[in-house]
Length: 437
Image (cartoon, rainbow, N blue to C red; front, side, top):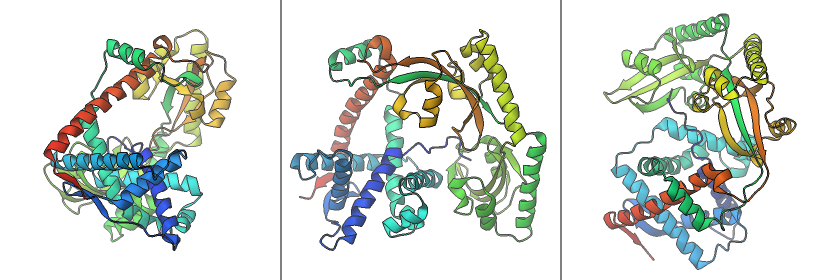
């Protein structure tokens, strides 16, 4: 399994594809129009089509109905944006940046999840789009690959950009009149405990993995068993195939086992933080390996959940008796991303909280701690957490005193945009490009 699960990854882009898709389906169904495919610009080996421009304009207009898609200045900016994207794709390929099949699969799965939430079911998606889900994924696979290339290139170039305290102050002084009012927020912290399966439950999952492995070894079809049993949604539908993965991108237990197998050989159950895997190595090189697997996830039984809930309830009592929540989080939380910061989740806009969670937090006072709640930041690791409502902040004009972190991030983004604009100007000098009309 990949070390970093990149499903967060293309939320905005997936949404854009969905909108563009809708536009072209409605056009195709309308006998009065046709999808345009005239080449407008050539960038290296990439092209910008008239349909790319119309699709991007439709997406912008859907986001902001006040925008006129026929405005020549807006069309010019959209074309420039598409050219810049093609420049970055070209440079990413030149820099040998690689997007793995698994990353594309995860992005496409995320896109389909968004669509399913919008339309209610996969069947409804297929009715609206006039094609199967697999066909939709196939049609947009290359576009998702290019977007991921751009994301990786941008991360490589600009993710380390920082701002000094003075730069943040200067940014705020220059733009404070245009920085929007900060909406109501709640400062939160939490302590997370992963639901650990009992030894009996773990043994039961391992035995199932052994039985499936034995069935495959005696003639069963690996892909059929992967579709039936695998708890990895990114690969189960494709028979467990992960494609080529660069060395170092897989968790250690999985990678070591996979490299120890001969091509075509199937492993005994291999335990990793994700659960138990049956691995088949298809091919391997010094720097990459091609495998498929079946994941048997270690879920928690009712007793496991009760045990985790008891641990968190005891921690809550300690905090309510006066122990520091920060220190308890550092000692006991299983979430590494927040543990070192005393469980801090930062300030969260109320509008971004799920209604049920918001309702529960609303009745807590500042300094109040919730009862143990389900927590699922990683689908392979079911967990529970207790939440501390540190402070409620009403809507207010931003200030460095109250909103430094937020303003700092805005300042960094501003600096990144300036550096990116300069970098793209440089790309335009070294990569051949032209507008055809």
